[in-house]
Length: 111
Length: 113
Image (tube, each protein chain N blue to C red):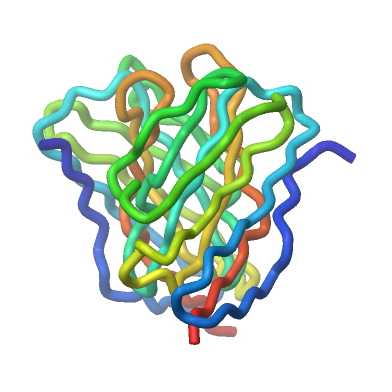
């Protein structure tokens, strides 16, 4: 069955550094991949979508890569700030109107 | 202001009682979803609806029921048959067509005492 894996351990980094989060998937060839941000006690918010024919996508300080051979996406936040502290979820289309979400990786940015 | 509203934010119920969680959207989206989120876990799909008067079971539908009588509304009932109902419940909607993202409501935290 389709499976998404994100590092369950929290990522702690210093302000100003680049945060890199990983999303791996198996038994799947998705047409696109999405990243969402979720703050504690709130609903996820969509950040970026990258299609299978795109290697890289950027939005302000965010950069996403998509390697369909490795079945992996990397999510980078450059010049990280304490306000970037949140849980970041990777998501893939689940067939039809469905979306499959990873468990997320918690990011802490220290000032 | 377009978006999704869920009410209430916090809900407490006694074991054995049914409870209905509200979800309303004014984004004119066709598809709506209910997810359950437990600590340290991802979002698990309970039910989804692609159009009015139609809905499908997700991965963990047992003990839950939904209705979709209006495009903008998709209420979720947590029945007494749900073995472990205490969780954070999220409603979402999505426009039809490929590549569209989901828009989430603020969530309802249900605690069954």
